[in-house]
Length: 125
Image 1 (cartoon, rainbow, N blue to C red):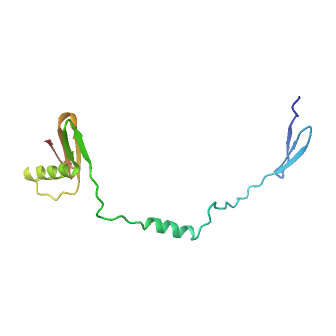
Image 2: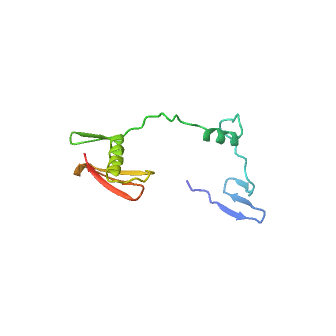
């Protein structure tokens, strides 16, 4: 069976006429925005929903802990931070501690740390 031939002609009023051998269809396109309806009806305006979502708070007592286990040894994030701060104080540093960054290298059995983006040190575990 032969396919019907399609021809398209454009006119200046943004109306396209498509002609096939069996039928003629007329499509009209406009550049006006289309209103989008939500799939689930909202009970509150959108602004109220975003403000409510940003007001979610989490308890300050949430427990967060990281434990590194390697070669039969175990080291927690609390131990790392306490030992890094103690090494800082033992070296005679008296500045207030504002930031601590620690790097655990299990293959070397070492923890490297940087305090206040200035002081660097390490310790074995």
